[in-house]
Amino acid sequence: MPKQRDHQLDAVIDGSALLVSFTLDEDEHRRRRLSGVGAVTDEHLLAALLGLPVDRLGRVEPRFSHLFDDPSTSAYATVVDDPEGGRWAQRALTAPLQIDQIDAHTDSWRHGLKIAHSWVGYAPRVIHVSRVADQVLPCLEASEYGIGLVAEETVLVAPAEYRPRRWTAARWRFAELVYARYLS
Image (cartoon, rainbow, N blue to C red; front, side, top):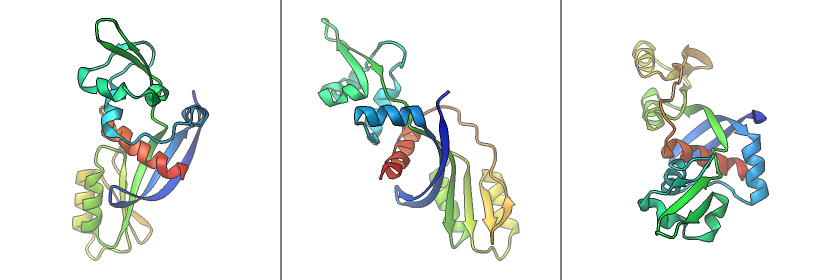
């Protein structure tokens, strides 16, 4: 089990001002530093890597084959071209961190709800507002959508338990965007 540390990062990611809590995978972070690989934020490349096994060679889908033409991708995957024109690869990268929670600090519940909906499926989400005049409707909506709600530093609704159904290139890209901010 890799050593891990908890971190928080204030960042604007894809136009949303967020406080992202995450756990850094120290082993992956060390591997990347040693090989000179930073954050990989190209979602198309991440989708290609996601389709590759980490423990053996697997066939590269033809739609992704061109992504491995550049020798610089050798830090991402070990690639072998077979004599019949096929391409095989074994992924070297894994996600550098795990997103633990996404918090949005905003002036209004409605604006916070728009931000939180942008990040559904990535991690538990919590909206922080300075105050809520009528708490009933925001609390009902927060509960229905599984979003945490904090007003005036008081937890009104806790976020629902987060149970990801699958690892996607979009989720991996989000982790890489956070990692890029962490590295800078």
